Image (cartoon, rainbow, N blue to C red; front, side, top):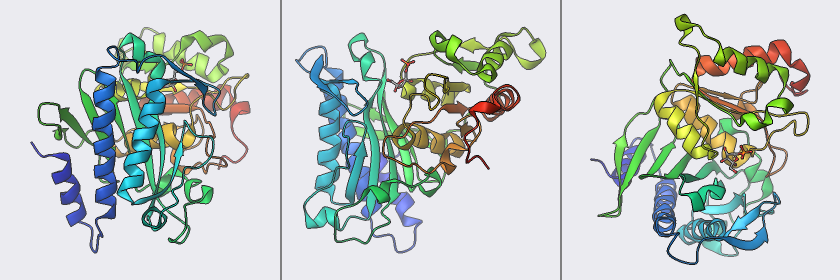
Amino acid sequence: MKTLIEFINEEQSHIPNASGDFSRLMNDIGIAAKIVNREINKAGLGDIMGYEGTANVQGEDQKKLDVYANNEFIKALKNGGQCCAIASEENEGLVTFENKLSNDGQYVVAMDPLDGSSNIEVNVSIGTIFSIFKRKTKPGSPGTVEDLLQPGNQLIAAGYVIYGSSTMLVYSTGNGVNGFTLDPSVGLFLMSHPNMKIPGGGKIYSVNEANYIYFPDGVKEYLRYCQEDDAKTNRPYTTRYIGSLVADFHRNLIRGGIYLYPGTRKNPNGKLRLLYENVPVAFLAEQAGGKATDGFRRILDIRPKALHDRTPLFIGSKHMVEKAEYFMDYFSKEFKPEDTE
Ligand code: P6P
């Protein structure tokens, strides 16, 4: 099996005049993933469980592993020198580095270092999610917020690490999606899932139905559609909701399906963050033949106004997302953002 570094080098060989900087950045992410994985796998044995006693910019209690993962990915990206700024779910402001090597870095990274961390103590899969953009500002000084406020259609790469029954790194540079499984006996990510594609005929829907009464009518009608008995269209579908975006998305990527985190009257923009949750999985979904919108707009075309912007998310098998969009357009036009083309 091809190792991650072999694949990274192979991809680099197809890019004329590649400097190797991106390859080193991707390798740094792989190293940080292995370090975080080691800590997660023994979380129940050390004092790494539990709360840090602090809250992040989202007002969410930070777990010790949240802070640990955040620090490890920041350290790896700082030491690598290819990254001049990081936007992290765990940091309110931009993370920059006061050293020349990083200030000359060509790339910026947006990340959720440990998504779904509320699942840690119940041993449910959690994940790291990341977006990589080219900086817009001139090298020679730290990256700026402007470097991060780019729409997903400008991505250089995006991916996630899922720390589950096995640990996988799944990412794309725009030439399809490839999955690498960590072989802990040798400490290498090996290509186990080449050229991943979301099956067309998905019949799984993932949504937190506890929010049902606050959902837009379009979502309520779509859920009714999913539950109707119609053998010709493979319904009723089945529902699976893990409460960890990476795990729910990864299952749908392999089995087909749709994940929805809609906006509600209380929270019209939903819960998930655009830059380091929705954009990376939307990039992968499209690269794998699927679709990702906020119910009306393509996720990758939405320009963030701030680092921690939120948007609704409808993502997965193309025909399922398009059916959900149909119901949103028919029943819930009032949720359509003003700047929808
Ligand atoms: P809820 C985890 O906190 C997360 O950001 C995603 O990983 C997950 O899909 C979602 O929120 C779960 O949110 O409101 O259903 O608990």
